[in-house]
Image (cartoon, rainbow, N blue to C red; front, side):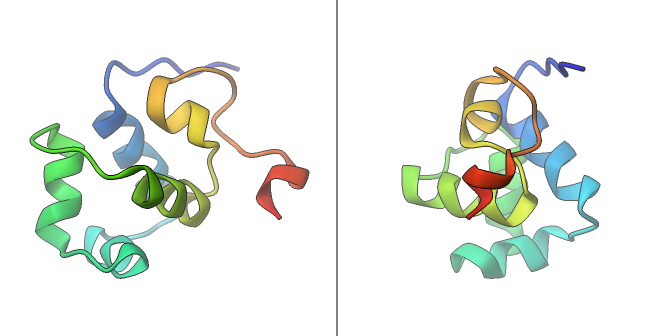
Length: 81
């Protein structure tokens, strides 16, 4: 089932909440504050490519889905390694 959300921020929020993480917990993953995670989710600013990779890994979603909503949100087993 493909889930289409308009923005990377909306997809990030969905991914974060689907793995039961707070913004503060997710922020620790990339060395950023809770406020910064909220700003990513609101679309006020964008994470770097390296941060996107870390966010996707922590939320167990593919980078492609997180960035542009393409494909399935959950990473394949081989990609997760």
